[in-house]
Image 1 (cartoon, rainbow, N blue to C red):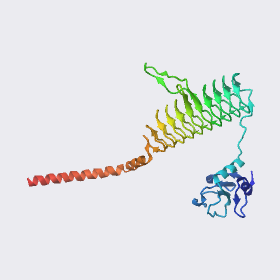
Image 2 (image 1 turned 180 degrees about the vertical axis):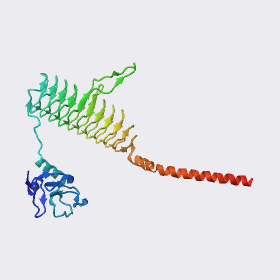
Image 3 (image 1 turned 45 degrees about the horizontal axis):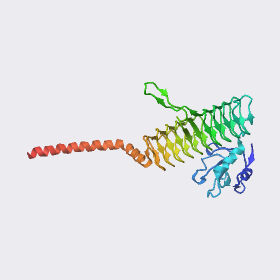
Image 4 (image 1 turned 90 degrees about the vertical axis):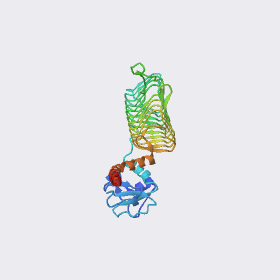
Amino acid sequence: MQVLLSQLATLTGGVIDEGQDCVVEQASPLHSADQRSVTFAEKPETLDWNVVTKARAVVVPKDANVCLPSCFAVLRVDNPKAAFEKIAAFFRPRRTELVKKGVSELASIAKSAKIGKDVAVAPFVVVGEDCVVGDGVTLHSGVVLLDGVSIGDNTTLFPNVVIYENCVVGKNCLIHANSSIGAYGFGYDSSTGTHVLAAQYGNVEIGDDVEIGACTTIDRAAYDSTRIGAGTKIDNHVMIAHNCSLGAKNMICASVGVAGSVTTGDYVVMAGQVGVRDHIKIGKGAILGAMAGVMSDVPAGAKIVGIPATPEKEQMRKQVALARLPQTQKEVKALKAELEALQKKIAELEQNNS
């Protein structure tokens, strides 16, 4: 596709530097752009434009005080990232109807299930007894809703998502491929010497506007509900155990593991590979750094890192001390040698005086 930069200026509400209209064929990030590409930079004044990209045109902030080399055409906008997203969508529009509207003849829908208006149900979807599927819901191929599941309006479940019995998913949610919601929690009674599965009578309740990444698992509660607050975003390969209760608008990054009965406040961030032990309380706005091993309650607004996790500044001091350890060992060894020499001299002096 070929398009004039001036057309992209109209699309994004931007302006082109005088005399710099040109033809571009694709939208590309800085590092992979070539002479056919338009790219973007939020802080163009910090970049070495002679080496950073080979793009033909660059989207920059309107107020950027920078003069790019003459080989680049410049499109100035209020928000370069937002503008570039529009441009990228122009060149690569989404396939908005991945599943055709209506219920496929190859789907299996229980007679007692209630299906809303304007749904899209792909072949090989299974909807169990007494399920409720809201208006505008999209169920991709391979989705399984066990009995008693409720799916809110305009929610999309991607291929092979499995929702266990009696679980509730809110409105406007996205659940990506191969995720499992409501599997039995990892709880056993071992008092007799045999591991007997504990009670699994609860469910999972997911609030509105929640997004859940591929291959994520959220286990059902023993008696009550495992809860995911509205607006929370969960990345791929995350494990949320039974009886947990996550607040609103949490950000849970990839490969996080949260053990049973953990509670979080709103706006909590867990970076990649964080591990949280059971029955921990994490306060509102706390940030858990990558690979943190959380062994105790975290106050609201705290920033913690490390294994075991401690406040960020404390952990940094420990890391500095650890880095100095080899030199400290050398210094201690030298001081020990000096002390031994002094002790020997003192002994000699005392012997001579006697």
